[in-house]
Image (cartoon, rainbow, N blue to C red; front, top):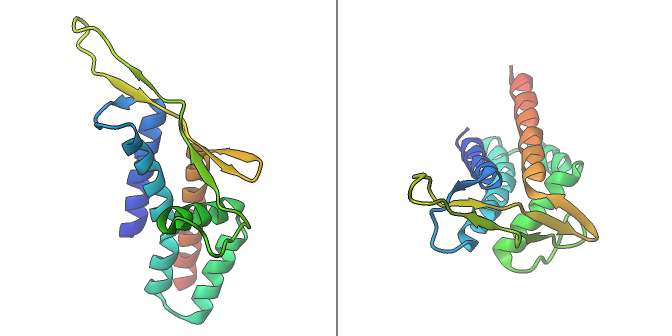
Length: 156
């Protein structure tokens, strides 16, 4: 599924940022854009799956699935909060915030030939809880993979 592959690519970008990637952007905020884009695309797997089989039953099943997992509800609220500036309705009761102000850039001498490297970790703050963005992202992907697998098995 095209959207799941896109989500996987954004997840790989977050993993790369966490492990240290070649500093390629003009501004460090571009890395945060990659993290936000992951959550937007991850939540929109819901729309892709509903449109793939647009029955009311499927829509309810998938919305119930999202609402039964705290990770996916936070993903949904982060996605919609970033897209629309402020949430008019939430799945969790509060708009999660992304924090990633602990970045570092490591440079090496010309003699080593190594590039400038960017490192960062992001957290999602929801109420008083703090979630590591990479752990939350990996959990969301795993939940969606399992749901897609389950739906495929039902279709057989």
